[in-house]
Length: 151
Figure (cartoon, rainbow, N blue to C red):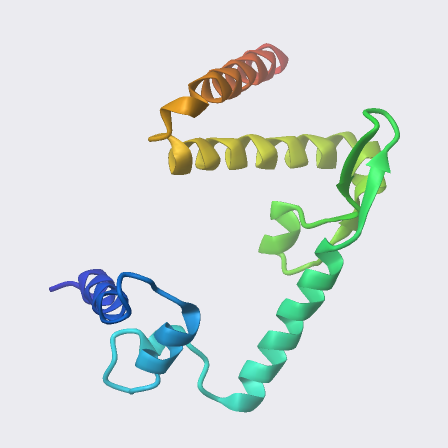
């Protein structure tokens, strides 16, 4: 059995024990045993774990602030984490600055398109969303055509 299969088997075991419901606290409880296939996914050093938790709280704080984008009159996050900034472990940028910078705006748009594709894969089995998926596909094709012409 591969490590992934062991993890999935353990998650299924935990859920079965709890009537089919899988909660994070159940996973942590099972993972606390060093022999558990889930153990390696957690930080067991309390000081390090506490700092990681505070970093998560800071990210959550950043995500709570939204503004109305003046051009579209739509609410958007005030602070954005671009993929390139994540790779360089940089941080967040103000969305107004990203919108004003053509390269950063294009990167943000590509991130949005990739997220739409992931969303479509996640919810693809829901036939009620076929019109939404069709619209996503049209936008993706349209953007790719523009990119091809620009290149």
